[in-house]
Structure formats: structure tokens, C-alpha cells
Length: 201
Image 1 (spheres, rainbow, N blue to C red):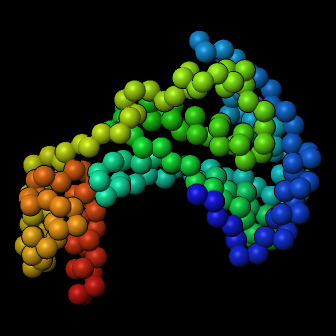
Image 2 (image 1 turned 90 degrees about the vertical axis):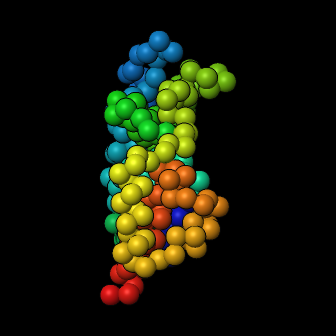
């Protein structure tokens, strides 16, 4: 997803100059797939060009659950001009419950590839293949994880306390029991209940 500030005249002018000044990144990384540009190599390639044109670049991690229960991880990349104008893009990848080091790998993947795309930087030699060597680990693939019993019972109690009809609350998920919801669906239902409670305060 791509977004911009309401006005973009100043940042657009700056981006023209930035593209002229961005350097080709060094290749300082080594893996069994071959050599590659690290996050730091890529950062050095664009930092001076940004600074010279009154811009900064930030990347922020985001995470959410879809209505069907899949965990979606993403990275928001934003170029901000000193005027406050900005260009922002969000890259998302569906993933399951992951170990912290695998999650860290995915952060690095997204930081590298989104920055290279944004600044129109050349790819590494191993990026010219069919992409198999660049795919995140198997355990980052989407899963419909089920919540534990304590989580289910807590939401059931919330429904009762808020005097919300369970059947109506579950219609959007096409389920007849709270226990049949996925982790993401349960989280969305919890937010919906909390929202209704706050609205009635």
C-alpha cells in the first residue's frame, strides 16, 4: 500500500535529486546463497542523498490479524521531507506463530528489499534467480492457530458481562461457538466487545 501527504510538491522535487545522488550499495554480506548487500550497506547508499535534500527515512514494524485468523506481519517505510510532506509504503507478509529469531530474519528481509525498491537500487546476484533462496523460512507460512481455553472463556465472560448476544456476535465469523474461532478472530471479537462497552460508558 502506498500513501502520501496531501501536498507532495516539495518532496517530489527532493526525490528527483535523491535518485541522482543515491550510491550503488556495497556488498558486505555472505551467506550460503552468495554475497549480498546488508542493511547497513544499503543504509550508507542512501543516507547522504537524503540528508543533502532535507529528508529522512524510517522503517517501522506493524502486526495485525486478519478476519480469517491469519497473522500478518509488515513493515512501514516512510520518506519524510523537512516540510512535513511524505511518501509512505507498507509491505506485508502473512505468517504464523514464529520464534523470535525467525521473526528477526523476516524484519531483515523486508528492511533490505523494501529499501532497495524505494531507492531503485540494483539487486544482488542471488536475487536474479527464481527467488527460492530468498524466501522466508517454512515456519513463517500462515497458520490458523487456535486460542487456548482460558482465552476462549475470558471472551465468553466478556460477552455475558457486556450483555451481547453470542449468536449475533459470531455471525460475521460464520461460527456457532466462540471456541471455534481462530486466534485472530478471537482478538477481533475482543476488540469489538471492548469498543461496544466503551461506547456505552
